[in-house]
Image (cartoon, rainbow, N blue to C red; front, side, top):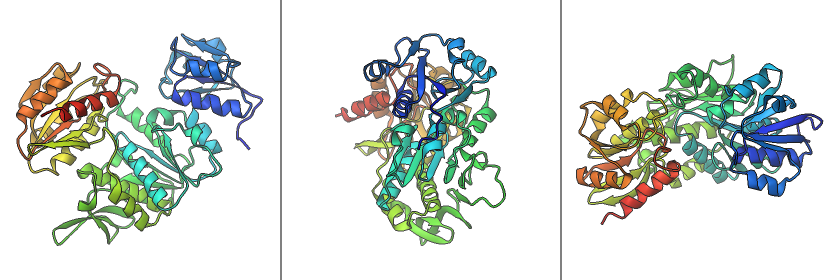
Length: 448
């Protein structure tokens, strides 16, 4: 039985991937609804008209009077809730909601909920693979891959969900079995008034959670808890009670839980300290929902990482090349620079730049000075980054990604690694971060 009143009128606002999943969900349950989108030709318009020709769809500027006909608006995460038409509808009593709220109302299996400025896709995928290795019927998605509502099924035993701050803004009560915010650093400052507003949006993930996982090295991830809620932690230090971390024995570093060594770090296929933290976060989440250690460690040993996330591309003349195009903010780039920098013999030759989304790049300066041989700058905000880096390392400005790859080859020495970790969005030069990463990998592979 669906937990949604079918006699009420709804409007889906935004016809992208999650909007289309809402259309399918509502249509299958006989709910009366319409669709609106600010774009004249939204991505799923042709699919909607083909499969649901009876649905009223309004494209272009949002009509407040039309929106106010609804009891509830399901707003796409791509559309800011501060949009004047949405605010006007809310002021007149229309509820603003989203697909994750609807998913949470209808999901019958426990939910592992994962957010954070960085690494959420890696950790979400890892927990999904751990659950599968433990023989669970697991569904993985949300902000990653399959939209949440398309995952709903009576056969599912565990949902593992990546959730963005935009999705959480319209989620009142997630009720996850275990929830985490992996880390918090400035991101989407073009949409939030500042870090506190972004932090508040992320922490909506803890509403109704039965257990929580936090990062011991990032105070902003620790929720304000009620008494008695089970709480697990992860971090790169030595773990204590209910903690996952790193232990050293006879010169060998281990992933560990409390006072027990689990597996040597060298058995991980994913490189860098940031990926060790990701492995520990996944172990904490899996342990919270009762996954056995042997299955989780088996999944860790075979997990090779996600495309565009500190992904190894090739070795050439003693230099390793890594594609971290998914690093679209400063925090993600810092994790890769510090994590990979600590894990190689030489130095990094770093490619950064693109659309900075209003971020402050000053936090890059010290880690770049400590870990990089040179920085290759490209894209719209390259001069802002150059100002922030100052004279930390030699800076090289280029006009294209191909030119960046050629410059990196000339600059790198044996034992070094070339790292594309832009700290910026890609839209000034590319369709998306995937295209940027693919073009980088192709250019690197084409080097003779």
